[in-house]
Length: 67
Image 1 (cartoon, rainbow, N blue to C red):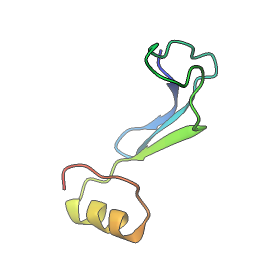
Image 2: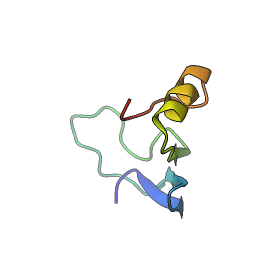
Image 3: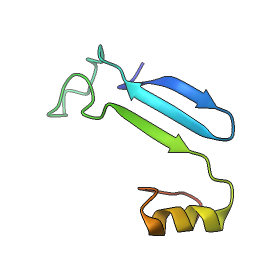
């Protein structure tokens, strides 16, 4: 497993990844070893391109794909 594990998945809606506290396998080239700094990562699935762009412009999203 990586630094995050699936906490919740709602098909077509969202994916919530939570920090994996026991993560200790970062590459030796990285300064930070151990669990991730973030508690969780939430990925929202937004199918409409204009809605994705609007979410980014309004600050509701930090990043989008398929612009």
